Every structure is written in C-alpha cells, then in structure tokens.
Amino acid sequence: MADEIVKPDLTFAKEVIKSGGESLKKCYQCSTCTVVCNLTPDKAPFPRKEMLYAQWGIKEKLFKNPDIWLCHHCGDCTAYCPRGAKPGEVLGAVRKLMIKNYSPPSFLAKWVSEPKYLLLIFLIPLLLFFGEMAILGYFSGVEIPRDENGEMSYVAFLPAVPWIDGPFMLIAAFAIICFYYGVKRYWLDLTSGMEIKRKDIYGCIYETVKDILLHKKFQLCSVNKGRYSAHMLVFYSFIGLAITTSIAFFYEWVLQWESPYPQTNIVKIIGNISGIALIIGILLVIANRAKNAVKQGMGSYFDWLLITIIAVVGITGFLAELLRLAEVETLGYASYIAHLVFVFALFAYAPHSKMAHMVYRATAMVFARAAMREQSIKQEEAA
Ligand code: SF4
Ligand code: SF4
Image (cartoon, rainbow, N blue to C red; front, side, top):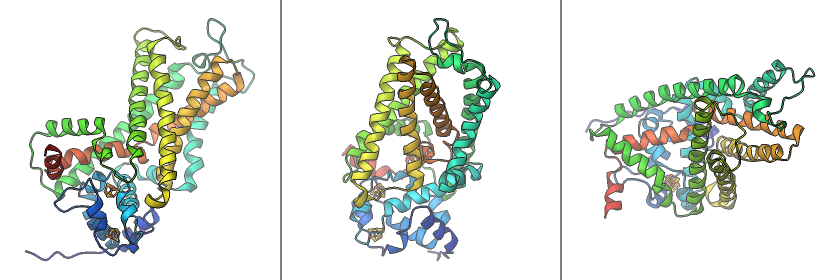
C-alpha cells in the first residue's frame, strides 16, 4: 500500500477551534466516541477519525467524506468522552466551516457566523421594510389604511404586491441559487473522495426522504431522548407553514382573494396549528439544550442564532395576529414588521446559516446511500 503524505494545515485547525471546537486539542484518540455513536457505520466509523483530521487540519479528508453530516449532533459522544474533547461540538464547528466553504457568497456565511455582524444582518431587512413604509408615506403623515370592513389589516398596511411578495420572491430565488451552487460543489467533492456504488440515485433519494420524515436517526440518540420530539415538532411545523403559504399564495394569485381570512378557513387552521407547534417545538429545543448543557455542550453562536430566529418568528407571528384581532394598532404593526424582519433573516440567510443543515445533510445522506456508506446501518435495521 502506498504511503500517504499528510500535510497538516494548522490554520484550518485553528479555524475549527475558533468556530466552536475549542476542546479539539484535548482528544487523545481513545475511540470511546466512536464506540458510543449509534449513527456511525461499522466501516471507518466516526467521529474519532474526524477528531484526528481536525487536529491536523486535514480539510480535504473532512470535507470530502459524508460523515460530517451523517452525525446528527445528538451529543452522545460528547457526554461519554473521558477527556471532555466534545467531539459533537467539534463536528458542529466543521459543519459550519463547510457551509462557509460551499454556499456562495462566503461573506454572508461570515456575517451569520460572527456576533460582530449581528446588527447588520437584521438591519438590512429592517431598512427594507422601513423603506417600504416611507414610500407609502407612513412616516410623513399618511394614515395606515384598513380593509373594506374598516378593520385593521396587515395586507392593507403593506399590500402583498409588490411590498411583501416582491422581496420574498427575490430572497427565495437567491436562496435556491446559492443552495444549487453549494450542493453542486459539495457533490463533486464527495464523488472525488468516495466511489458511487448504487446507480439508483432516485431510490437513494426516496430512502433518505423517508428517513428524514420519520426522523429515524434522531430516534437513535440515547443521552438526549427529548431531542427527537423537539426537532420533529419544529420540522413538521415548518412543513405546515409551507403548506399555509402555498394555500395563501393560491388564494391570492389564482382566486384573487386577499387576507385576512376567517379563522375557520383551512389556511388559518393549518397556519395556527403550525405556529403553535413551532413555538412549543423551539421552546423544547431550548429547554433540552439547557438541560443537557453540561453533558453535551451548549452549542455555538451559530446554533443559537438559528434557534433565536425561529423562536422570534413564531412568537412575533402569533403576537401580530392576536394584536390585529384585538385592534391594537401600533404594537400590532411593530410586531408584524419584527416578524417580517426575522422571516427575511430565516430565508435570505438559509444557505449560510445553520438552516443549511437540512440541505447539506440530506445531500450527504443520499450520497452515503449511493456509496453504500450506510449499508451496515441498513443491515442492522433490517435485522
Ligand atoms: S474525542 Fe474523546 S472519546 Fe473521542 S477519541 Fe478523542 S478523547 Fe476519545
Ligand atoms: S454527536 Fe452523536 S451522531 Fe454525532 S458523532 Fe457524536 S454520537 Fe455520533
């Protein structure tokens, strides 16, 4: 077998440390983490080897194998590591660097991963919506219109076309383009590091989608069992909100029927249930993290930014609706603008924030199936 020349890159190792992997150097390669991880395949298991690659700064070895994303950050390894090296957190830091590496433009990943840019990322959408309000004359004495029944209405305040649909369609297109380029580059790197053995990619996609919908991997976490239900609630509430948005879009563009819709309408029912599920789910995520912080680590700024954005999206959305029903104008409009600002941040920065995990992890899972990397897990499940 030919000897492999390892080229350490200490700059990259330092980047991992700076990105949330502070405990990286404590690892002494005992392999306890690999033994306790319920998600790793038997062959070339993780995360011990990834700890070694990260200590030496071997970026290619980390980026070109799908294992970094096969880890679901359950924290079992961190809880059992005898050295407190927190492998779960180190892998989280590597994932953050991967997002920065693959999702263009990289300056946006820098903005969402460093606290010094926190104000800037919210200032952009805030100025956008304030700009719209200024154009409509709300800062120069124009009275905010009401709907045809004389009731307070956010559609009358900022009509969907062009003030809401315009910017949100643009950021949706932007996010799709960034994800497209990011995933394309990631897939090319994966295929250069490991061979594809299955030819039925659609079969791999189908199995991965089924896995994700059932949250099969989360069920395997043993230390933090509550993580499964919390993530499941947030995940399905997002699906519910996506259905709500699609129905509202259909009403508006096809039926030419503008909101507000009656509380008994299907769009309201699905939206309200999903909104409540989102708030409960994200509060459970926060409670779980706090409860298991000592064992598993509290998570990085990058993790908490997304958690906070989702929590504020849920709370301001609900608050805005309640204040509208109660006709509390100033607070209602303020909550609505805050809601729009956070929804903007959620979607515009999705390819660069932790939100990108849904796309990169799904890609890695499909690839792992195609490369038969998850074969042993599949065999265990079938047994
Ligand atoms: S991270 Fe901890 S458990 Fe894993 S090999 Fe290093 S010291 Fe051992
Ligand atoms: S965090 Fe969980 S899934 Fe990730 S390597 Fe550790 S034990 Fe495995």
